[in-house]
Image (cartoon, rainbow, N blue to C red; front, top):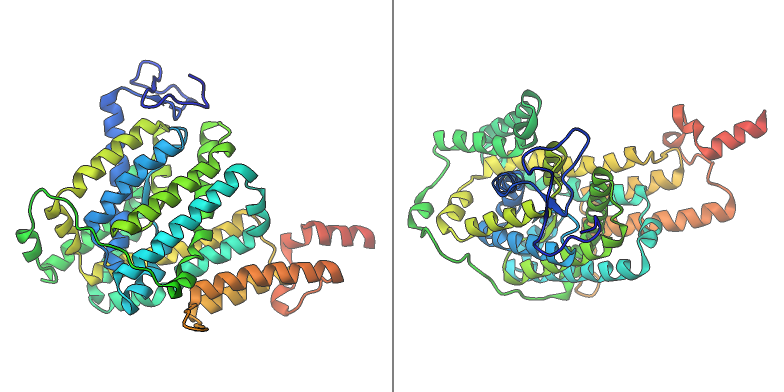
Length: 452
């Protein structure tokens, strides 16, 4: 079996199946012994657990249904990528804002319709990339645009976090403090799961303050199917959901690049299939009442820590998640998490989403002395944070949609004009005045060289 094509459900045993030599990794088409593979699969379930359940809790979707489609989506991803790309498909944070907005105005079924539209659009992008390559994505969404879109989605959710915090201020503070302390106090898997453990501590604090009602748990059955809901469609919701596709594309492409870097394999040819798989999984989830999906950074962290990139572990993880989704009492217990805990966790999570956008800027050394980059980020963020709203002809476009459109239109329009006019180096405001390492960028370095 070659490194590029793992036979379906037939992984090679890595070495003796019990250990990994220094400098080696367990490749996607390999596995350790089955007991060890099952243990690592269980670790992946724990890694995705806190974040995957937080999304339905914050949006009002059924937790067990979301977990059910998360498991189905992960296995679907495995099938479509031919077992070459290890990934767990958990709940996407990028969909929280549009789901919340549409559920509040039209109801959950119309939010499901928006999720389906998002998934099908992502699947279409995946097909295009599979046949045309990823270069056009880099041209359409340079780092300044990608970072702005990711950041504005997180920051747009700030009011939602505050509304939950008001439901239990003390519990929220305990949750936030626990997440921060666990992050810096513990190494390894515990530190990586700081949000999960922070939520557990906040939950205990809420129980002690009598903020939790266990009646639904007592009434729920031990075994049974999750609750499914039919979707409904309204074209006015598309302006809220379609911009999320840009984030899902960035997340998936980033996931493929990360795994390729860590395993030493060239996975560019699987990028389109990864997007197609995530799109179909998202559409499938929307069709039954689950949150949309995305590849999970938490699980990439587990792979990096264990050096095990075996897709067999993800098949096991999907099996575990599927079994848990068929336990209504478990889902009812998750649904008892009170507003204060959700507000605390949301404060951290939404902020992290915003900072992920900033991280994209930093990693790609985006030059904000360039007025094109500065205006792209500045305007799109304010539009999203203030939640600008435009309602033309019955269609509703709010902060995320308008912010995304602003980032794309402003960047490409200003860049084209600046190149045509030769004004790229002109500082539009004091905020864009270059300094430090920015003066080492190619345009300024060329100018300084010419001056000498």
